Amino acid sequence: MNNILFVNHIYEQCGIYQFGKMLGDALIKSSKYKFKYEEIDSTDKFYDHFALYAPKVIIFNYNPSSSPWLNKHILEFCRQTCKVGAIYHHHPVDGFDFYIHPNPLLKESSNNFVTNRLILNYEDEYKNNDIPVIGSFGFGLPIKGYDKIVTIVNDEFDEAIIRLNLTPSYFGDPDCVIAKETAKLCQKAMRKNKIHLQITHDFLSIPQTLDFLAGNSINIFCYHSTRSTGLSSAIDLALSVKRPIAITRSTMFDHILEADPSICLDTNNLKTILNNGIFPLMPFYEKYRCGNVIKDYENIIDKLI
Image (cartoon, rainbow, N blue to C red; front, side, top):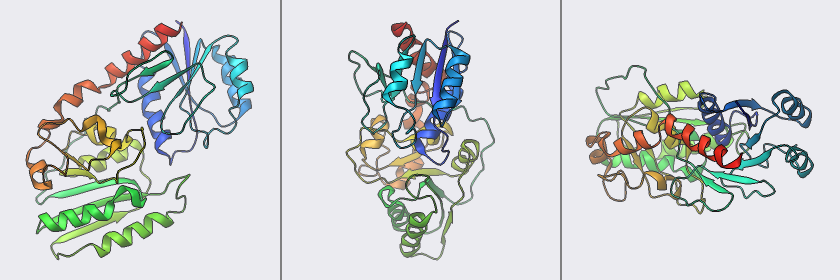
């Protein structure tokens, strides 16, 4: 059975890292190929793992900022014996033999492959909330519209709990300075006495994040519009816990915009989306399940070797 080396970077407080960790943990379950997941931060470590596994294919969960050690000399060395590819997020990359786009809305062409998103299998117990609990999480950057969430809840509800986990970002906000300023904007948007705002800044592990999301009546994401071709990994985790989801019309949510009835706040209000439950999300639970994503990667490797 051929070895496939999957390389992630080491900085946990990063959306690209979290995506790679989830994907790597899934791919090692393949029965067709031996995927080897490794977190690497130097040339020496890479060469050690290359010698250990002698891979037929290497996939880098790549971001130039998080893997500055990776250069064209390493790529040239690797392609003497194997194919070398990169997962394309939102930073332009070149110099690889192939590229993997985790965006099921795109079309494949030549050395560009497309995969489904990945949702996890969450099996813990769910809380029954006496009053609506509206939650969101992520790096505390203004582009994610957390203060808009507070405004929407205050507009539509007289009694509710808003839970926001605004975390530090290794590359964008390591000391949580921006996240704490975002929290102040959220506090200013509060208007009603029976709506309670709970803001935390702890960086949560993937299992802890799933528990947080599962504890909410609905999870809401109000990102501003961007030109990014990347999709939000926050949605992958929110889908995993099978709770209702509300979104804005951001390109980062394009892969779930087709939900019917609509989960978009441009079309339905938050109460309606909450009352519709998870019915609009049912098609995504099957489409993005772990087994389908493993098959996507196995099919890519089939084509490469």
